Length: 98
Image (cartoon, rainbow, N blue to C red; front, top):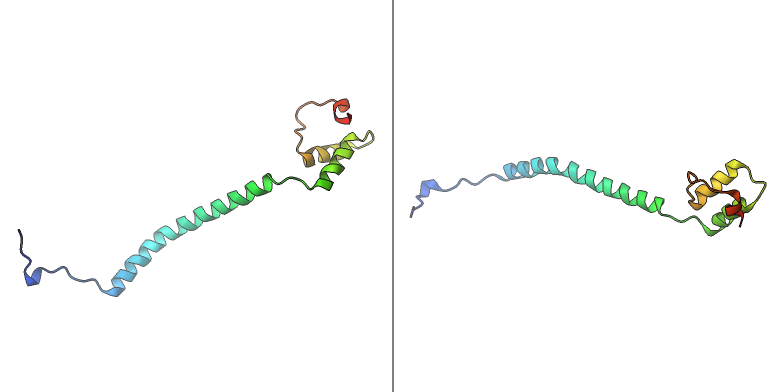
């Protein structure tokens, strides 16, 4: 085994060197942590906004517009978007009015 001699002790680092090492490590990792946190927050709010159901009175208005025979195409498009109907799929007017 090796015996430690009094002169072979590991030198102690000064507090300023320790703080500097901590600060350098923090400047490397903190921006990444903040970016990931912001991305998670944006994803949560986007998910919540996309999956929010329309209010009941807006849905009732949209249904009445779709059932109406004299509604303009723009109003029908808005009503279909408000309810969440995919307008790319061909739909006959009789189907909606039933």
